[in-house]
Length: 289
Image (cartoon, rainbow, N blue to C red; front, side, top):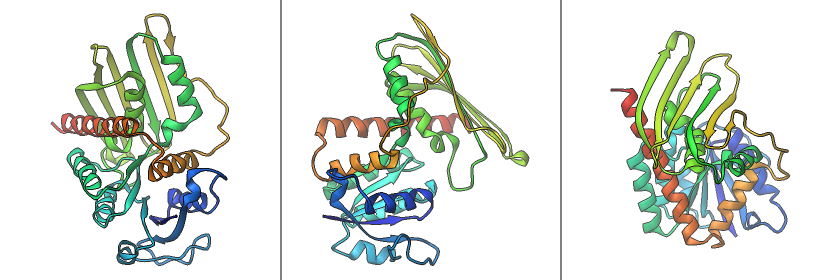
């Protein structure tokens, strides 16, 4: 069994505890048992699980795994603390808001012989899986992914990092990308921001990624992907999956812990994550020039 601690007790942390307390029968997640949670606030037990300190969590021999569910700006320090203590780590995306720090964390994980896993539940949604099926085999001419959503709370980092799930979509759909230009519009008085990034595929096909946020903006992803044979202007609707997204991710992470994921897949995932973080950093630099 792998004893686990959950760091951060917001929505994601609460769901992590819930899923470990009731894993899917026969799944790798049955190997996890939650030993406690960590919060900056002093809290009563959550779902029957008691609060413990960071110091206790890193020193206890019956705690092998940490789930990092804090604000984005706190991810790096928390991940580093648990990796250096020889604990496996599952962290919500983005792993860090700095590419070099992420590369360092992978190195620490390798040196310690532990699993470092970045959650990306947006890749597990049924509508994304259906979109990927529809895109497969088609030759892209040009495309746009325009995300809108409410104003971000402090602590989520620059939009290229807070919105890295959308960038990951584009990399998963169209392969390795390069950044050619990026701009940022902001109106702090109205909590409004709009980041526009110009990207190209390896065969020089243009992609535009827009992250637009502001009070009252609906949460939506709008696409326009023009191919040699057709144009996709809507994310295809798909029925909701039988297994929740966080539970799917928990099973994937647990499969890594129990050696059920082959090294080639682990390497592909690492390359994709670091590529997206490097792109996000380049976009931020261009916006701030």
